[in-house]
Image 1 (cartoon, rainbow, N blue to C red):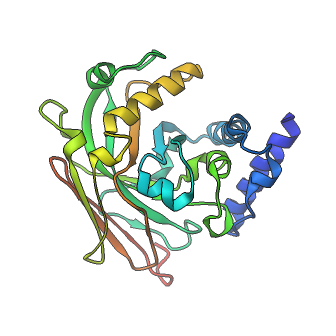
Image 2 (image 1 turned 180 degrees about the vertical axis):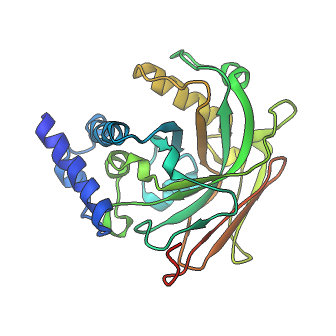
Image 3 (image 1 turned 135 degrees about the horizontal axis):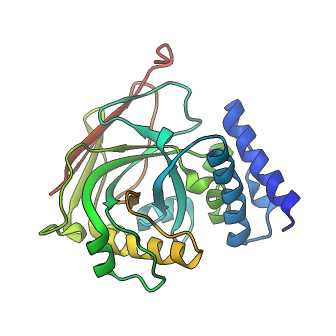
Length: 266
């Protein structure tokens, strides 16, 4: 794709977010199945964010759960950038109208204490580089109408990023079995998603290895201080105004957030 073609797709997604009106799938504007072109679109909007003063604080891995892959009809993970202004305090409220069509998923977050610069990244590298783990909610969103997305749609759209919520009690990795953790997420007290660490690419550490190796290969490695959302442990759940979500992840604790009603824009 030419630079003007990439920018046209990037502009389409920005305009959808700005106006609150979702756009048609952008795959019609991209070469069929061209994931590299989709990441080029993503980079344009990430660079625009940085130029506007937004601060990158980490990365998210998407499409790691077979259940989520089945929901969206894709067969491989992807990644997007996390900005500081996407963070919601634990137990906090998401203002009505802030997102177009939010869904919520529960994840394990890793916070790095060292860089991960190697293309041949290993689980041992990730273990040594990680300061601590946290339970997390990712509030995904799509600028594409009706979540009618393919892999290239979601990649171009910053991996369908929206917001994220981190639990407040850090847990060191020593002695943790992240593959064996069990997750239960409720909406208004009703269970809407369940899963285990193994449902995330066979384990959250595997997902982090994939991300670290992928980014290192692109010349943009994970750095000390980065937050890594390692991917959903179970299916996404649709969020509506007034909903309250809470996820409990064994060995890690709980994390919660709520969505303001339409009459409350705070």
